[in-house]
Image 1 (cartoon, rainbow, N blue to C red):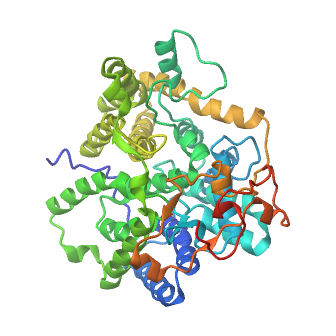
Image 2: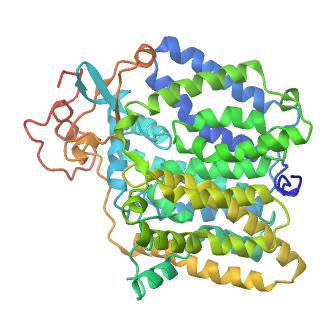
Image 3: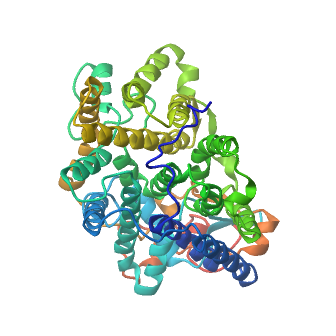
Length: 525
């Protein structure tokens, strides 16, 4: 048991410091905007006060250290690389953005153009409101409301790039500028499963460059770069939560940190809580075996109250009409057990199992965390939820991040000894093959045609005048109706043409329902 619960003593017992505070504030900011903009004043004022008090109490802990581990030179280098890395994604639209950004631009436009909460129709007396992973978009939407729609894209890029910067700064990397630091940053950015080899083994021929390499079987674990480029609203909070966990789970402050942090992630993505819960279980087990008591966590009464109320509010909102989203045991495994069983085996070998077996040869700590991550990654493809199996795509992030963190520690250990075993060279080959996947993402971003963002169509218009269930939910819960502001109809394309937005949408059908007929008070559909 002691071996399973062993931690990375050098990197997993950090006291809260300046990076912890910056990450907590970064995650908290959209929540403060949400509370102020979506709730009635009678509910918003006490919720804002409780949230701020909870944060302040944590930041004033006696064991809080306001220093950061990196030297100024290393910190600047990491931030510059993070901003360059993020610039190739869809946020900012400096380069070609992938197809998923069409709907994300609509979400951002709806938040910027509409009073909150944005609604798309009213059916049987119930407004259908925006209910999606919106945390990343809220700061940019506020900028758009204040400075015009032309400013939201740059604001979104800056906020996404700050999230990428925090992720890289939280990694266990050398603290001063060096070739090793740059090399490990590149390892992180190009970290991916061996999709290229998987395509070759399944099809018998190399993939077409530079098309996407993922989804070569009915399963997919996107690279970290792919997650940030395709779904930063989900990926960034998951990356930050996972790195914060690894950094602090050996310190007595982690229960207070995660009591405050996790309720603040729900408005970003509900998958952040779901993804980290199994690892919090092993951290809790270690907590009790170390003889800690509840008082050692220094959790305050007001932090408990704030966490309970924020969890209630955001979970109730994000689960509105959730049964409309399909979920089941993996349809592929159920309908094609023979062929898909082989696909599944090849998938887990290519995506993480070969790398994990190589890492296991030199594993010096974090055994329980490592094997739990592997078990979760092996089980995730067996359940299907959401249009593109969101549980598999998003919940894989913490496990993959923990494999990355353990690998970074091993690489530095070997580099410090100037002795690389055979497994190190094999890991290098795995990383080189895996690097093809994020390289393809970057190549397409740079060389494919750039298209300016389209904020002219709302989410329903983008989805051909249907309400996508993973973005919109029926507001029929009395407790939420009591605390949320009155929903306001989202402007349609015709109503937005007087603004400075870019429009690429066609004419609005005359009989498209409430969501296509204009803005203003909700009308029965």
